[in-house]
Length: 329
Image (cartoon, rainbow, N blue to C red; front, side, top):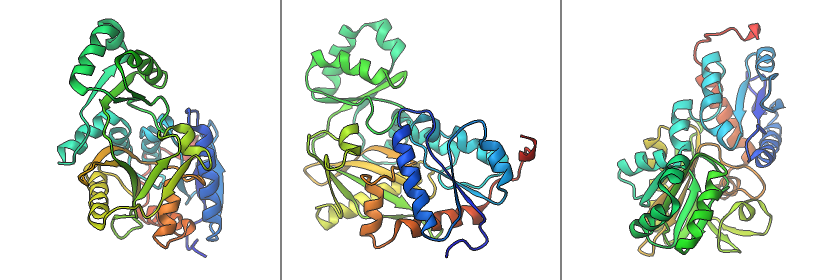
């Protein structure tokens, strides 16, 4: 039993983003893991009843398992802070920076970590200046192949590998379907890994790296969430010094972005063993095909114990002083 003085954990999943289904799957797994530790769990979606539910469940901790903009852009977490509700995960201001790929890459690069060369283009700019001129300029600067992805989206939605100039306009349209800003960056060949960082109240540590080998060769949405579509190797098949480098980079990313409790950093390892930052996730997937639960198991932990530790750390930290009475809602 890990419940101690904790009354209830509200596992928040679903939402209205394109990643709703994945979030619900993650939420169910986190809820099951917490219940396995004897903790009372209330599963909740994000809707008009949420604030009244928080008012009824005083002394509770929120465990957000929301994916996509509605859950990872920091807005909801700032509401929790405003209301004095303790929650698992990074604060809203850090989430805002981490969730925007172009801004996060700039911050991480400034911390001395290698990042891909990239350009962020708003839809209006792309439309007004014209695809023909921009395609040539991007090709001259970045070369082919290149990656195109939405600046503010997860689960590889809207991401494309572009191998020739004529493919770029369609890839841009695909990225703009998920947001108003597209990121175009150099494609770096190498081994793709992801490294989770967890702080259970005793300082952040990096979990074993997970190597990602999609059967299709592209780690897209289907490869991420279809059983058997991707091989996950944990620990990754890396030389020990390379694995140590990956762990160090993930910890530095976590610190540079001011993250808290849990993050997952995606890296590509070049042929000379250098990890290159791709992106970071403040609310990583917890589904049956997600990398973080696998890394937790490889580290010798249980998902239930880790989630319970994060909840207790959040409860001990508490929420900021309540500025608004929940009972009024």
